[in-house]
Length: 485
Image (cartoon, rainbow, N blue to C red; front, side, top):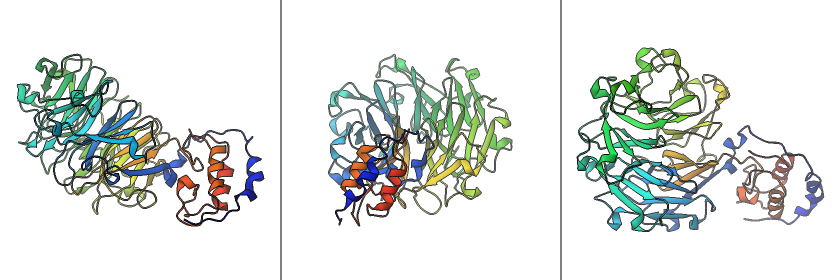
């Protein structure tokens, strides 16, 4: 990069604004700003063996774990971990460990999602080289990440639990039990929910149980892709009953009732009761304290963007409790279809982009629950590949750490390892990402003032022009003293 040295011209003017009162910017303005986004490919920086292709993950209060699925060559078990207390783009903040390669379990590879219970991280068994499987991988966060003794694997089905509990997508924790959402057991899509009692021993079959409410007359469909707990109920995200027949029949378990009592379960398909256009085929969900949002993925003939929402204050089996909205079909952005998971950050709901009908994509979709669900003004989209730092496309699942949203790097084939991160607490002008626009940001910009090309957000290129100039300085000074969160 090149620069000229005349930053001092603006110093007196800049310092005059230091006493400006702080204003909180709680409007989420950073979503469409390139400086709120970052991307990092651990494998490209020499970390691990081949850390590509992940599906979801979990956060333990410090570390973010990405669940290994398929690295483009084979199903793998190389868990990727990021230290949230360190810089996102520092190789020192990343590491991998492959329990399967170190003799843990039978073949703990190929997972889809992870769940944290306060001490342990459970990786949801999905599919490996032998097909759909049920070998749960568990990491004890009180132990060293790279110590084989911190890891364990157990396959309940192979030890006599249930009928055929294999092939799960996503899970959730209700404070005592971990639930695994049933997808495909190798024979076909299924509805056999797997549950682990965290007060029992991980390798003790008595701590494991399965139940298929559909087989007991609850609902008529099966095949789920994600689970969510709202404080009382566990919802299983509807996907497909076979490889071509997608559905929207949400299955729900009331945790105040007995797990193996059909009366504790309910099922409802809003699409079959006149809700929406064709709301079938969802992957993952998010809860904002009142509503459950289901991320649209695929229906029989194409990827779609019809978001499904349930109002938890209403009856599950009442059509009025349900609504759908397709932002793309209502004029927002282009190709807003094909999402794999949703996440809530305390204010906004985000949908994780994977693939639309043209290609893998990075069109992150966001909804503001303060607005009306069917008002296009409440929806926003941003593509951090076209407008920001990402160089790859397609993600499977996301993790929220209380401030940042991490998009898991992976897609169903031709996988990549570039994790994407959005900083929910930053805003234009917050160069050092400390949540406020102040003297440190001003000093950082002035120290690089005059760069004419190749500048980054860290240099002070707030407006994305590639240089650090008067435009950037004016934008920073105009927001000086503001708090981002």
